[in-house]
Image: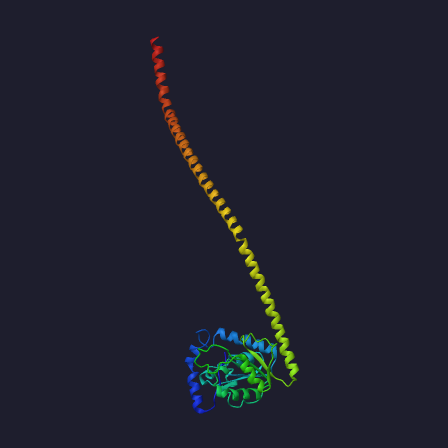
Length: 317
């Protein structure tokens, strides 16, 4: 995702460049993987760009903390005049050649150039030292009327996460600048905690109405999910009560399988006996055929012998 921008003092910038150099992007991004130009990150930021164009149709966008410019690149491919800034000189040096003129090294604690239809600030605020947060937020709010903010409320083990806050903390700070969260805007394609903040000047009653409407929708969804879970639990309970019957049916089936197995074994025995009898008959038939052949082979000599005996007897008479 995006990378942080922080203090503008030379010493602080030098520290930041050391913190967010090559090793940072290789070691701390994506479940132990690396943050670099690959199919995973290009696809992710392509989906984010699709959502931004669909939901906001901005003409100009600034990605505050753009890292290697993947979101800027994706937005520009979709016809948006997008730009980016990031505190990391290493990250900006990795920006795609076609996108590089639109991304530069910069800090959120410095005034931002120009104004934008939308500013995105994705996984950046948690990197800011707490003392610099208010200044950075003020700079963001002066440069737009719409802010897309995503800042993890957890992941305290990341050593560069200096300022992890719950979502309501960021909402409170932005409210002081006149920016209120849009509770009906779904930005789950960015992260579960991403939110849209817009500059609003409205009566308190209208603000309460909007938040109450969103609260009621979420309450209804939770009630429906709870009812569905209770129904599922009841079905599982009924299945548990039926389990003795199912086990009895299973035992009956096992007995039937054993009976069929014994029957098959018996048939195998019968087949073996029949095959043995057949072999015996074939052997006997073979012996008879041999005897017949021997007899038939001796018949001519026997006929000649009989003829000679008959001639001798006739001569004597």
